[in-house]
Image 1 (spheres, rainbow, N blue to C red):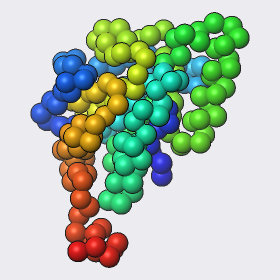
Image 2: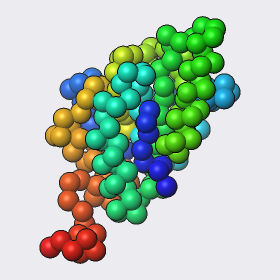
Image 3: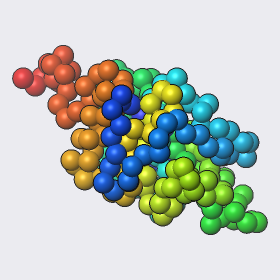
Image 4: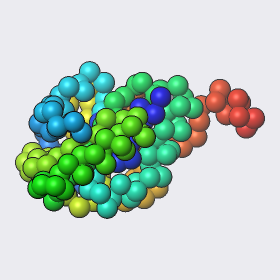
Length: 192
């Protein structure tokens, strides 16, 4: 399904991004909330790699090309269930009445559209240690099945950064997700 995109969670070798800094060592966790207000820990999604998008409301389209390519490649290679996709909405600036309820309602609507869980960060949890993610941009992270960050990037991804992401994800899921489709997929599409 659309388990590979988020509008608004990898490899044995850790891959950091120049834009994102070094990932925190070892497994990390955080307590956030669902769009319905219940507390939930990110460790709930362990057992498979996690593709995590952390964005504020003004940054949800910054990495739309990555999200679209991620879904297309996952579908094309039959890997839509190989990893979890978790989006986290940074709602810290909306943590007051009545803005909180309006923002949560919007997140619930978006969650239904994209078919991916969208958690909410009302306290700036992912901006604090050990995560230390920038709060006003799009952040893309890959976590291995045990919860260790093996790739992180903040801001709009350039094509070469997207390929680094797919290389790291490929290592985690054991299937090549880089630029060109495997021969069987190319043959189905009528390409040499």
